[in-house]
Length: 472
Ligand SMILES: [Zn+2]
Image: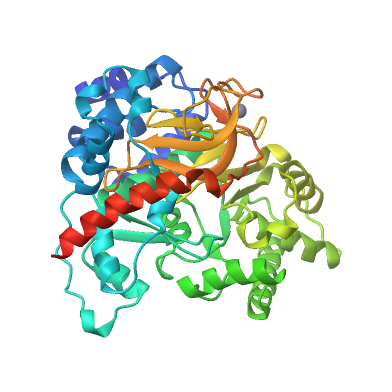
């Protein structure tokens, strides 16, 4: 009784809209093992675990949370990450300089390119050690003479209890981020909680995924979604093959270079569509609710196939679509978001308000998800401070277009103060719904890479210097 009372008083925005509390309670039950004991929460973790509805925390309350959380995490990286400490020294910034919310803008940012510029072989193992904040687990020594592969190095760390994962990029190089187990579990919980804040899909009876399984290699898109086994009922995968790092890179780069996808890739897409079609047909005549999750290019291809075969579904309120990961593989077949949602309604009979998209990247803790009312991307503003930068990498105001950057206080195992390669426009409030926090406009594009080269080269040199010393 006492404990329950204390808990009620401790809740932030206890007056969340009806429905959300029920969703979050179910999530907390299903993902209980992802949440560390309450008495050990850091200020950053409090910003994630305490609010019931992450998107309805009053802005002034959220900014107070951000300041406390980001200052805490900045201090940690400053103290326990030699590479980041050196970068701060060069800029003349220490934790004592962060007194007010606006002071957060002086925190040294790292270009996302930094996480792509890794050496190969045994040097890659040293590189990971230098990006990482905190004590590394004892890694089974790699046989340097055997010239370990990219995946050998990652697997050695992961066998020792870390979660090192990579994303597939269009530039032909993987972005690598090391996480400790606590950061990894927290990241997964945050994805689940953000989804529950925007939709009721946690109640869906059946889920079909068109993406790699978490056990297939070290791709982040699969790893970050490992929690869905615990979060959703009756989960099925539409892909009956595994994806290696080499294969994803190949699919991304070759399809761009040649203006078409490799034949084996096309064949796999066809097989996946076949499995997905059968799955949809199984639930068409029932009253069960379904959710389909995957990359938009794949769901677009699935709809092409269905239309060609003259198939049409009427799932209505029983259906949910969640897309994420953008159009990376098939930039050439990109269709505007609104057109995509209209097609989903035409072919699958799922209303636009039940069609959700996620903007995310391996470097951030959590996701940036659309709201059902207007499909703007809502930022997780209790633990992340979002920024938009101009050409000289200085912050600009709301409504101006620029490069997206963020200060992610939940990134405890690497400095999550990052400049992305994406061009966005941030608005102070959503034009379509009453959630108080900032949003990104729906159309997000790649930013010109030339602006960031100088900054990326500077940071790369500082990191390389550290890493040469570590080898001595
Ligand atoms: Zn909104």
